[in-house]
Image (cartoon, rainbow over all chains, first blue to last red):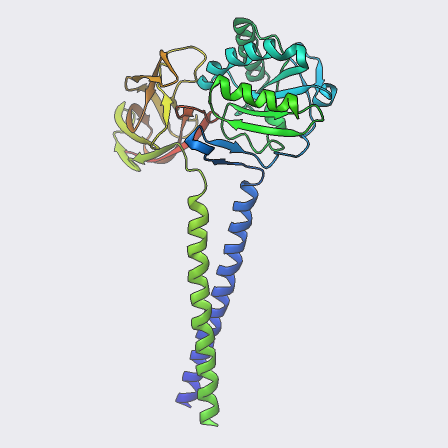
Length: 211
Length: 169
């Protein structure tokens, strides 16, 4: 009798361990799925040949740039599709981003240099990253800040608002500035996260023009 | 019969040990996976609990740590386009933020633009919060709003919760 009780107890204990291990395995798979989902579309930095600036390799490289249609500062809708046939730099930025403000004059200069060859920049403002859609005052303030910056820097290219609405398509945009270089066929040929240099941006513009 | 029971229990035990080993392996894999994810730029350190005289303003030092390699704007950034670090307490929590005193920022310049000076916090910093609590136990969900960068890139503005158990006596 006592032995039967012992065997029964041991069996129940072992079955409990099985149940726990099964639950732990399910939990692990759930967490792993979340991790993969959160990392979807994000690129990685790879060392440049010869030890130069690390290059950002986006999963979008070699793929069509995700389509979008956003309003510019004047309220007009601008689509990426309407720039097919031109090389386009899609530059995600915000006024609170110091490095973005450093690279903007470089981009303006390069845009003016290569515009005649069929190059255009679409500045995409992600000012309202932490704003609720219903926060009209917050959005008005963010738009005003973007407009003020555009005027100050004499930005000649379209600046589009609500970049956060397309951030998922472009890999999450965890950090700014982030740029995508799109060739005349609408394919992403290079990408960059963070501040690099004017010459680095220029080489990627040339790549987009010459693809 | 007794022999068969013994074999059955031994087999079940072996399977359980295998399951435990697999579980341990999966936990290790999870830990490795998580280390790839970004950590929060700012972490609230302490205090988790404070006792203050009810109805009287009391000074509480709130300690925070900024992740290595990052900086956040001070409460008084060098330019009006930059987002200041601010601490607040939502209404209705039984505790009111009477005043907050922020540390002075450290002046730095980005290597790529040495002419532009920035007023920032790095490492650990302390906000002196003057709290007024009603009598009782209040789980306060304070908010720290900040915007973090490193030398080359910036993360979007973020608000973290600063959980403090405030006991008004």
